[in-house]
Image (cartoon, rainbow, N blue to C red):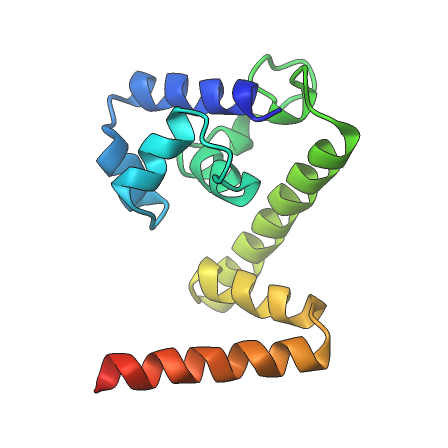
Length: 138
């Protein structure tokens, strides 16, 4: 499923002359995650793939006839195509809001994701972040 998308990421990274470390830096990830992505590790999320595609300007070039369109790649199930499509749409919306409001797109995506959560899940995540923050301060 992700094989074709991974190939697009790998090919585009090489076209740009980026190292895996540079790609990782661009998507705020680790070099090891970048390596795992390119080697087809099943633990790599579609969200990371979408971030990589966006960082390398692949999503801005999407066209239904474009061979690099990740949504039209063979081997994607309808479920995965819908998941990737939702993630790309969320990123575009967040980028527009961030640009208009002058804030970080990651902060907007985080806020939008929290709006989709149930109240108890939001509280659980809020407390988890607070615990992590307390640990990092001490």
